[in-house]
Length: 134
Image (cartoon, rainbow, N blue to C red; front, side, top):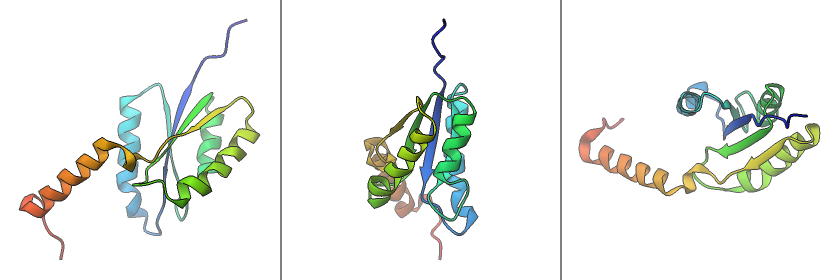
């Protein structure tokens, strides 16, 4: 018998907002992730206001045959949402799909390269490389 094939899924998880334009940068992140890893199913989910939510996105990845889902919070830090709200949602997904490996990763804002990129962007904007909004 052949062992099951590992099919990775990446679930990018953002907060959400009432204004759908808020999601554009996160959609760009998802598009770049899809382009960089064509063999990985990529889904974008939101905690509130926008769809899909984490449960629906996780279900879609499971339905696509993913055997492993890496959940990456697109948050600047691991506040209450990442530490308290997300784990029960992931436990529910695991309960609905026994054998599905679901791993929660640290918030992207805790990565040194993102902190550096944000500092560089802030300095570039402050030094006149961007247009100030009034």
